[in-house]
Length: 402
Image (cartoon, rainbow, N blue to C red; front, side):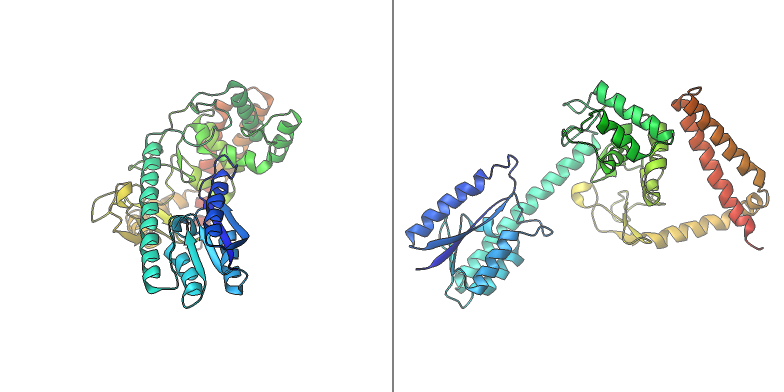
């Protein structure tokens, strides 16, 4: 008797009840019984995509291994697109079936992967299934970008807002604001997290808080009303942040100052609402279609500017090494401002930095004592810290031998 393996898969099981794969298994067992095949194993990839290249399907891999070892000699699937949506996955199976006595059946009809005609038909079917997934992915991506550009919220309810994702939840918002004040006053993330758990505060999913979750919540631009797309603050063609439709919990200055204190140093620049991630973001334009080009990090020290694809408003035909272009622009600017640079460094006064640092300490002390509010202290401290950075840069220039 032929020993068969049943392979079942569904891409999205939101309910988590595996009913979809159970129905597939029932139908596949009927087909196996009609052919007098004995089902020895069921290979189930529930809630697993066959289209995404980065996704590894554990049950599919075990199935191929068992076919190669001779553990099973036939495969039954509900439909070919449940088995493969990437041509490379189909070819891996074809390598095993070609020139062998292995059998392959689907509920929709048999496909002989050991024959040239069967392999050709399978390749055509998988190619169409792959194109269908491509089309769906492109439409979904375009839809999500459009929603993001309009500032509409998506996804599950974020902590601090009510179920509609627009209106603030007063209780949770007060917890967030109180935590922000404590962090700005010098309390650690761990201490804030422990305090929330001790008071019985739960996340929007009903879980205990962990430090990393608290950090991610405070680093999210959503708190200040900014729209995030694919993990980054979304910007319009002019390079300005896109505002969301919801009520912000923290004002921009408070949130920016908070990020400066709790974000890892290498990520802080990316969270500055008024800054640009790359020198020419929002400025350099595609020479082919005129669309604003975007920056993309390649390595820790290099990036590129590229024209977005047509489904995102560009043509997708232009790209340039960003670090080289930035260097050219910087050289051009410095060549016209060399005199000013020299004068600035020569006017450097070490006492100014000491005065600014003392002023920062004074303001933070007043905030901790309660004599000044955060809305007054944080913007001022942020401005003073920017001056301090500028003075330190001048100090470095002045220290270089002429």
